[in-house]
Amino acid sequence: MGKIVLALKKIILLSEKEIFHVKGSVYCDTCRAGFETNATFYIQGAKVGIQCKERKTMKVVYYTEGVTDSTGTYHIEVENDHRDNICECVLVKSPIKWCNTPDSGRDKSSIVLTHHQNGVVNHLHYANAMGYLRD
Image (cartoon, rainbow, N blue to C red; front, side, top):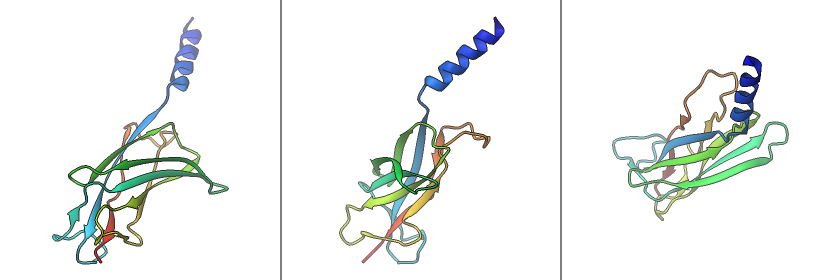
């Protein structure tokens, strides 16, 4: 009886979609310093994408987008475990015409979207801040 209950629990867990919550921010580097400073401000309405690629072919197998809020923070839900994929947050578009050049090296952020054998049990994952350079 105990084995049947364990098997049923495992089937239920496997059939449920796993949802990850990714949180990060987008800023404007007004000094073109290459990092956040006291003059940095956070961009409302910036589009951010999350893409996951197959490790061998580097083909995009998952993509979704979100938009930053009034504090320059985005919250994007990602469905399913992506343990066999390389995932990253990427800048898509800035709503500010004079601050829309992605800062090379700060234009994407790697993110782990799996719980498989990594000890992470939280569904909230944080990405590094990404930024645009002022013209």
